[in-house]
Amino acid sequence: MIKVEWFYWLVGAFFAVVAVLRLLDRGASKRVGSAVFWGLLAFTFVYGTFVVAKTAPAWVEGVAVLVLAGLAAARYPGRGTEQTTSAAERSALAQRFGNKLFIPALVIPLVAVFFGAVLAKVNVGDQPLLQTGSATIIGLGVAAVIAFVVSLVLLRVPSPMIPFREGDRLLGHIGWAAILPQFLATLGLLFTASGVGTAVQRITNAVLPEGVLLLAAVVYCLGMALFTIIMGNAFAAFPVMTAAVGWPVLVQQYDGTPAVVFAVGMLAGFCGTLVTPMAANFNLVPAALLELKDTYGPIKAQIPTAIPLWVCNVAILYAFAFPH
Amino acid sequence: MWVLLAVAIVVVGFALRLNAMLVVTASGIAAGLIAGLTPLAILNAFGTGFAGSRSVTVFIVVLPVIGLIERYGLQDQARRLIGKLRGLTVGRLLATYLIIRQATAALGLTAIGGPAQAVRPVVAPMAEAAAERKHGALGDKVREKVRSYAASADTVGLFFGEDIFVAVGSILLITGFVDATYGLKLDALQIAVWAIPSAICALVIHGFRMLRLDRTLASLPASELAAPVGGAR
Image (tube, rainbow over all chains, first blue to last red; front, side, top):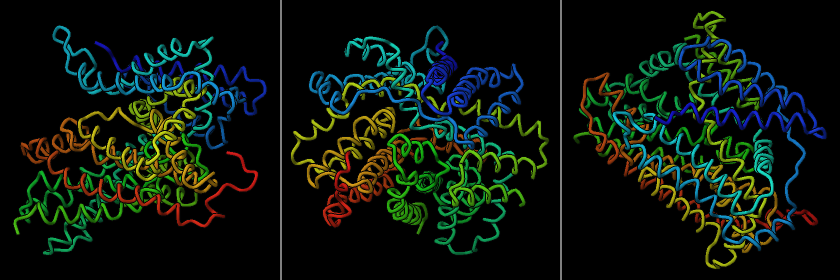
């Protein structure tokens, strides 16, 4: 069976290479601190395997994570010295290679989709070929490796270190935002363990008006969106709001169709995901990747869609879920 | 109820644009302490949480390939390709990408697209080139707007497409949670079908906004639209 942990080690190996590149980059500022950041991150990816398997104490990873946060707060890691091609060189290279340049970019989704849609259903003996529930991650990892080899051959790259330098360049643009999504997911778990959900549920019950179906539908959708904005993902909001309003009020009291109530409730939560910096992987990481000065740029582009779309969800819920 | 203070830390921290990592750490520690966790338990929670959510960072592995093909001129080539498609304005391009992203996500093909694999190397440079062809060299603000719109087309398309696919995480979470908690036997297909009306609304609303970007850019005064004199790309 192909295990997802192998690919976490692959990611860890990339971070380790970046750490070495930072350390050897004598011209760059924040050299040592940046190397420590990426090196420590590489450690958490490998050590994490044993934390998940419960064969090593989790607090060690916890300490590493807090040190990473401290380094990030002190504005590490820094960028390296850029050693990429100039605009003129790129233009000449584009002329030379033409549409061949798209091939590696297309290999990634094709391989990833093949793994996610086809190989995910293949069994070897009585075991699935890919670890259950991780086909997408495994597919992305394999796709990256294949595209790596394809591009080395296709573009006749003189040294396999070049792609790592280029990867380091992009990672330099992202900086500590690279681990923010993971960090926020951790916070979500801490919130849940500390009872934030129960507190929200109590507030919802206190403000819920009785006897007006439309208002109950609004409270459910608004609660989904607001709690999603706080937690950064609708998955955490769904059980809380459904236990507070969705099931006892909309389904049991007003006789709503469960499939409609829950499907639309979840999508009302997605409207919240579109506007919250807590959903860093969807909203802040793209801003870093696109080198935007305004890290809230994508959120600003999404707010005017999220609001009318949320209203649509309330309308769909009200119109189709209940016997009128 | 005091645990909501931890939520307040996050809200205030993000609003003041303090360093996000610092805000999140402070909030996590506060939540743990208010809930009565020991320092060791809090460290354990940070460790387990971080180790258990490594999957969200795996997109990093495509960076060496993307960086490499950028080095060899991918973004230039993407621009050149747009040059050949005369009728394609930035709005039409992004609306088309939105449709493709949403349709493929609805078929479960969520790996097509994504900010690292598609938006940075291909979609954003194409969008900029399409805008430049019509409006001339772009100023910084306008360039940021075009890039932000490109990112938003990817995200909206993914969110409101994937829920139509039966085997997606959110549907499995819905059926898993309500079946286990309330003893229902919900059909995943029913959930997927009821995601379609919202998906259509998302396509219409966001598609309309993508198309309107052309008019928004055209109505901007030249001083805001164009690059400052001497300002390079």
